[in-house]
Image 1: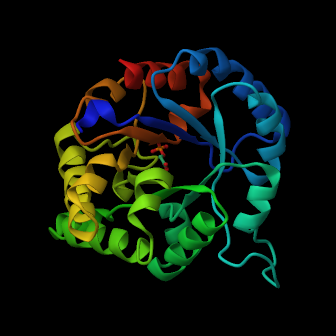
Image 2: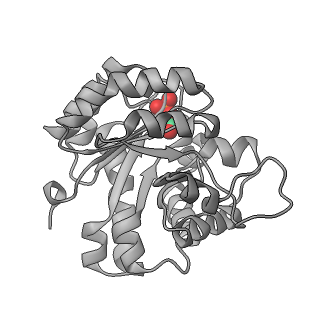
Length: 256
Ligand code: PGA
């Protein structure tokens, strides 16, 4: 199986943007492009916009995702939302371990693991984010950091789950929201090492079937080059996913 046999996944991460009304509008604008896409299209929206986005995306190929979930099914965790609750709402995808959660909200490899496990147990698909800080890249420890994050998150996750319900997003923290994109070669190098780790942890076959995205200032201008790399199977897109036009261009690049 080669790169062309893995269906690329283009996922928008709206972050803390677009309430229900704006969500309905943007999903509507993206709809026509998703219908002809040669990739899977996912939109990860704020919790309060999930219902509006689900309704707007009904009957289209667009999948809706949340941006996080708690590891417990329910309980005294003020402000949190469980994977079970997302499942009940009909949400198929959830982002876990985004670097903004790790940096600003104290999430650790341990909680990222627990959230991943909970999401999979609830039957959701997970977009698992990993990536090094700028200082870690400069210190030459990118490979160690990314391997460790991936390995800890996937502890106890089966080969079948990895192949069918986990998308790994390599997102170098220094490239997120900064306009600094990893070069296609830099990004592919890390994606390839994640794939090699999956082969080590599971098997060569599982590694070949695992979808590994790149994220970090991916946009309409650089998507083509990044997505042409053999180990980059799609993208997790923040800023550029807020524009239907730019996001459509990225969908098109992934469908080429
Ligand atoms: P960006 O965000 O595309 O705005 O850099 C990517 C992400 O955080 O997933």
